[in-house]
Length: 386
Picture: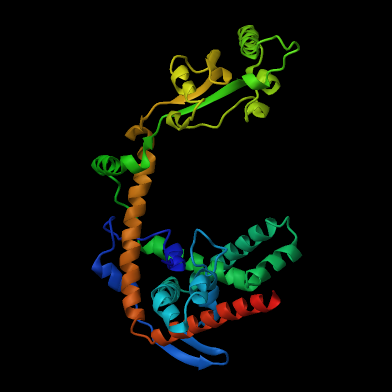
C-alpha cells in the first residue's frame, strides 16, 4: 500500500493533545477546518483547487510513493500494474492506493493553511531565515558549488525558491503543531514494563552469536616435498607448529593470512559474526570447540574431515533478551512514537473526511489514466527501439 508520506512527515514533531496522551475531540475540531475543494479543468487536464492552492496531476504522479524509497515515484511504483492489465483493471487495482496519495496532498494543504493562519505574519522573517539556512546546507552538500546544487534541484523538479518554499511550509506546520500540541505526559514505569514484555521477542531477543578467527589448513592443499610424505601427518605438524608460534605471542591474523586456505584467510582469518547453528560441515565442529574456551583464547589443532583447524574466539554472545534497563530509552521512544502515530491517524482521518466532500474521484481517475498512458507509451517505445 502506498504511504501518505507528506502528511505524516509534517506531523512528525507533534501529534499529542494537551492531556499528554492523544488528541481529544475538541482539539481535533480546533485543528480540522473545512476548505472548499474544487475540480477545475485547465490546460493540460484536471486540477484540484484546495483553499486556493492548486494540486496538479503531475505533482501526484511524481510524488514519492514511499518515504523509505524516496527515489521511487507513484508512477514508477504503479507502472508494472499498468503494463500488465487493461485500463479498467488498472483503475480497479490502483485506485485506492492513488486516492491515498491525493488525500495526503489535500490533508497537507489543509493543515498548512490552518497553521499559517494561526501563526500569522509575525513569524515570516524568522521562517525565511530558517528556509535560507536549509538552502545553504543543501548547497554545502555539493561542496558549496551553487551550479551543481542548482542542477540537483532541477533534477528534483525545483529551483532555489521552490526549495525554500517547501521548507517554509514544513517549518510553519511543524512549529504550529509543536506549540499547540505539547507533549507532556511522561511514560510510566508500568507502561515501559508492559511494552517490553509484549514486544521483547520481536525487538529485544538476542540469538547466540560467534565471532572468531580461523586458520583453516586444507589437508589436500598442504605442499609436500617428498611423495612418500603423508599429507595428513604433515598437516598435523603444521598445525602444531602454528600453535607453538601463537603461544609464543605471534600475531594470529598474520599467521592466518600466510597459512590459512579458507575464504577469510586474506582477512586475517576473521569470520563475520554468525549463529553457531548456522555453521555447516566441516565447520560445525567449531561451535562445540569454542564453547570450551574464553574470549581471546585459542583452540587447536582440531582435526576434522579434510581439514586441520586452529580457532581463536573473538566474541561470544549468549542467547537471551536485552534487559529492560539497557533498552529503557528505546522502549520509552517507541511508546512516544506509538502515541504520536495514534494521534496522527485520528487527525488525518478527520481531515480526510472533510476532503472527501470535494470532487476527488474524477481527479483520481484522471491521474490513473495519465499514469496508464505514460506506462504503456514507454513500453511501446522500448519495443520499437528493440
